[in-house]
Length: 463
Image 1 (cartoon, one colour):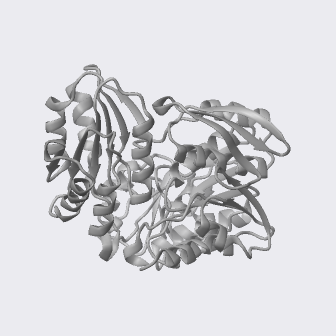
Image 2: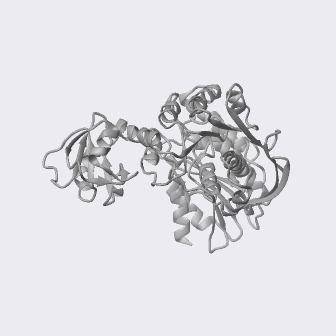
Image 3: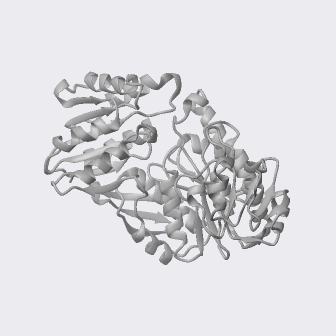
């Protein structure tokens, strides 16, 4: 955020200055544990916690706060603004920044690959433009505005995820921020419990292109029929990418190298270029094509793109290779999961070179609705035969999903000696500590709520 006095900030968010109007701040926080000396603390009321509870702690360091409930005994040297709704005030600040400052905003949505694609786009664009990006998976009605609220002075491009669990969420975020470019990774049955059908998911994802800035551009995955369908009647600029279908930016002559990455020929703009992506898997190549198409759409040179591709690295817990001293190798993809992403990652396991066993540690896939057991059973049936060991891990308190996955694996021909089940991530990690051997290749993938990252941390610490 640009440096603002609390009086200026109040004007931008429609609040009332209670004290400290001349106090200035240049950063926004909503977590009292992340307060910095130059920050303003927005006391957000969430479903589980009310930020007002942590106001005394935040004001020990912050320049001041934005509140809806005014406490007694406020420190005299702090700026305080009262608003009716602190979440809405956070969003109004983002909207004001969007209106007052000249920068290009890229919004990314999709069922899988949003964070990796965001990181790739930012890496490519930052070779030639001052670039700011959202951190983690801050992609909802609070996280996306918070990204804009903390945009540094002089930023030329902002790259932000735009996620959803329900219809209308992307419309709210994109309507607030008005992206210049909307990027679609894919549309698949994720969060289907809230939508009923994949067509319902597609309709909700369409909200991004419906809320682009005037003369906006949409980046379309031509290999995903649902993305193609929702963008068919978009009358603005469309830029396409793909592998299986003709597209303006298309990968051909693909040479997959397992965990070492992928070499390919990029056919684009009437020329062929040989490129190498160090991240493994066809899904990461999809993400890179989206990033290249986006970077070219906003004018990044081919020289900048080639430099950026060489610098692309996996995001936190999203396909990170972790070699263990005992000779085993972990493929840490524990941040999230869904049937579509799991199938892609298991395919990667079949292509990877392994001196030892291929071991798939699969955590529950959450938010799949009434058909969740069938999704898990089908995922188990789809586990490739080249996988030697399957370890199913439940979210604590519900073993039905993981049991369904193992039932599907049995239907596919896996014997009981190759199947293991654990009620939580910690128990799975303790098992793997003694089970893994030199040369083993181990995939760990599950929805974040399962906590498989704890198993990764245990194994890293143990070895």
